[in-house]
Length: 292
Image (cartoon, rainbow, N blue to C red):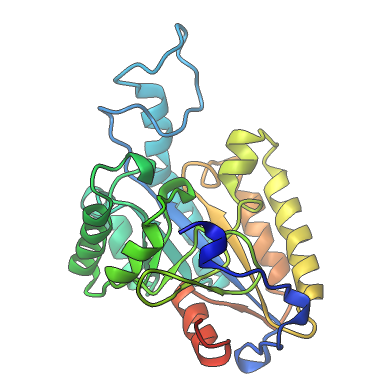
């Protein structure tokens, strides 16, 4: 199906109001992307261009740059989550569950949500068997945590024409790839509809730091500007804001303080709820429109 066949246009200003639990005005969810990069493959992203160009293997500088995030950056960020009592959502490669057991344990102790994020960190259009990739990711998360994931985020938000159909058939309840709204929306599939929970490309450290090459403070500035506007928009109907981080980016020493300052600012608003993706999903299922 084409995107316009999966979802009809709906202006947010004309929808019936949605009320969040406990009088909250808006909800924020924070997604931490934990990935395993295969040293035998071309690195998904790079910080240092090889002197002679090309995509050499092994690419030690760029593999190590990413690995720093899982060895150090994640644990630096975790202190911020604990300090401000923020529920985290772990968007994780299926292969990363075996590679980084202490991260899995830390997330489970804190009752974080686990989202499928591809079995490996690669474009879903280049995966040999997409259904198998989606299924394997759910299976390893269920085996490690005792609970199957309800949500899915494609690596780099990539999808094929069939991805929503396969996700629904394989038991997923929501996807976050369709960054087109500040409220959850229904997507049609070849079976029953699936919910898309609002994600972000704008408050995403990959876009800001690696593609647009902003200084570290841009993450705080943009997050707070976005928060203030969505908070104002939510006067009559609940809205959702996402914050997206990667341990090798926002977990870097020179960026961490800006990540922390975001929660220091937002926590001053008593009517902002920090939720997980599945909590947002369940809220929407209870108060939102029925599926098409």
